Structure formats: C-alpha cells, structure tokens
Amino acid sequence: MSTALAIACLTLLSQTSPAGEPPADATPPPAGRPPEGFISRTNPKCYEVRWELLVNVTPTTRGETSPLRLDDANFFFPLVPLSTYSRVEMPSVRAQIQRTNQPDAGAAAATRIDRAVPGGIALAVVPIGSAGGQALRVTLTFTSVVWRSDIDDAGAARVPWPSEWAPEAKPWLQPQWMIESDDPRFAQFVDRIAGSRLRYTPVFVAAKELLRATCAAFRGVDGSGLETAKDSQVRGLRMVGAAAAMQAGSGTEVDLVCACVAVLRAAGIPSRAVVGVSESPAGASRAVRTSYVVWGEFFLPGSGWVPFDPARIRGAVSSNMPTDRPWSGLGRIRELNNRVPLSFFFLPPRQDAMSIQFPGAWGWNARGVVGSGVAYDTIRFTMIGQTLPPDLR
Image 1: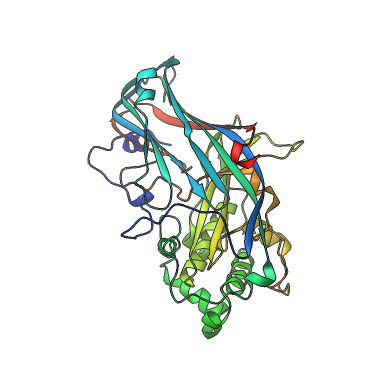
Image 2: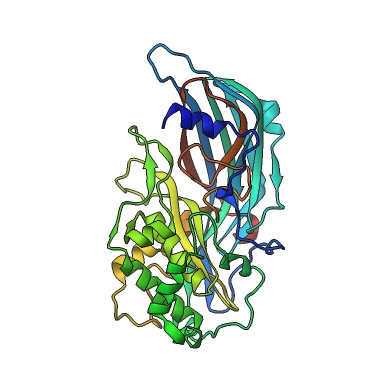
C-alpha cells in the first residue's frame, strides 16, 4: 500500500463513500426472528467473541518515525442483535481502547449502540476523538447465542412464489457494494438457466437450481478469501465482487457467495451475504484458529432465511441431484452453531465508513494523516464457549 493511498484512506475531510450503502428501502426491516414453517434451528451454543483491531504505522524508510495523527475519529463495529440462527446478548457489548498500549477508559465509556441502522443490524460506535502515537488498539467484546440450521426439503420445495415479499425480505432484492445484482449480465444468466418457467417453479427449487448453476459457472475458486499477513495475522477479506468474479468465472470463496447472492436477487429472490466469525474444528491444522467466514441466506416465504454455503455446494452437488432432496451446504448446516454472524455488509452501512485496505465488516471515519508512513491494520478474533442463557438451558 503506497504512502499516498494510506493518506487518502485517512483523510476524510468532506468525502463520502458508497462502499457501505445498504440496499435501498425507505423503512428499515423489522428485527430478526426465529425460523418457522419448513425450517428450524437446534443445538444452541453460546460464545463470548472478542474482536480486536490494531492500527499501527510502519515507517517507509529506516529510522523514520511516522506517528499516527487523527482527529474526530470513530470506529464502527457491526452486530446482528437478532437473526434466524443467532442473537447477541446486547447488555454484554463493551469496548476497550488502547493508545500506544495505554488504556483509555474515558473514550471506551463513550461507546454507543446505534440501532437505527438499515438491514437488521446495529453498530457499536466507538469514538476515538484525537489520537497520536504509533498504534491504536480497539477491542469489542460481546456474547452471542448461535444455532444449527435444519430444513424439510420436500416441504420447502412446495412453497410457491409470494404475491408480495415480507417486509424483512424486501430490502435484500436491491444491489449493494460488491453485490452488483443490477448488472444486466446477472439477469441474462438467470434467463439462460430458468427462462420463462422461473415464476412457475417453487421458490426453493428455483433458488437451488440457480445456486447450482452459479457454482458451476466458477471454473476455479482462489482460496477462502481470507487476507493474512506474513505472520498469519488476519487483515480482512480478499475479494473483487460479484460482477468481476462472474465475468472471470473465478474468484475467492467470498466472491462466490457474492455471485450467488447477486444471481438470486436478479431472479427476484431476496438474498444476502453473512459475514461472520468461526472457530476451526478441534484438531484442525490451521494457522489462524478463529477468523472470518462468509456464507449466504435466501428467504423462503412463510419460513424465514435459508442458509447456504456455495463452496460446499460446488464440491458436493452434482448436475442431476434432485432439488427436493437434501443438499450438502444448503439449509442443513451442522457447523452453523460454530459461526457467529457479524454483519450482512462488507462495510458498515454508512456513507462515511471506510476500511484501511481490506474490507471485513468493520469501518471507520477520521480526519488526519499518518505522517509519511503507511497505515497497517490487523484483526484478531477469539471465541470462548460460555454457559447458555437461562431461557435456553
């Protein structure tokens, strides 16, 4: 990352960015709710999640000192208070700030929760104010309950198209950053796959056919999409977005999720990407034990949100597998109760929210510069199992 780019990312005097804009809708959708109808949730687990962000400055030349200098800075950390398969215990949310390893209790106490955010999420707004020195560390901790998903495939395959989508689903028909569902190539793709029979095919069956076709359109998948530094520290998500990946027929697993969501939206089926954090299974050989994971959801009328994992669909679902039978990675995801959702956006849904380089759900705004050095951010997640809340024991 060049010095000029580092300074540009930090100098937000009067600029706005469309990167975090939510799907357009005049009224925010209602809070999430448990599933019903043909989908269900089981096996709840409880985790304390620690989300630690470190911003420091790397000098561009040996011996040079490049202090961090910010004014009127705010960090935005998204939360999903309530969704089909998760809920955050909102009183547990707390923030900590360290300025060059010195705790700042006053700034942390000023953290507020913004619930007037579109898309069914909330934002923990952590005010930094003025900051200087070599490093800034912001930590958000919260407790979340997550469930495993299940579905009655045969029953879901009989659900017809609704005359009108539920209010919670409507916003997720619109394009957003990295999910350019209004690109005409997506509509053309849907027409090639489903044609005139689309609206005469049950929603669940149509979604399955479109997901299978989208996964097949990717000739290759370039890794998980997790961007890490040389020392294995997480920096964010590596992605080019739905349109570019679909055009190339390749991308990361995150791009594959974006392409699947874009195709479903182009077909008129509400869908969204879920950015979360997941803990690797016990015994897994992985440098980063707990980190980002991205999957998708589409809306089934009368039931709720159906989760899907395109990377698993791509590797396990053949071209002739019946759509009324269970598919690996769709609807019935056993490891879903090891995943904690963070957001339905790759950047917070604010005009002024930016990432330093790689998106990863969080964002910030600031006035100031980073001397002549380079701003460098790393993320560390920790998931610690907790006792279930009293209402679930």
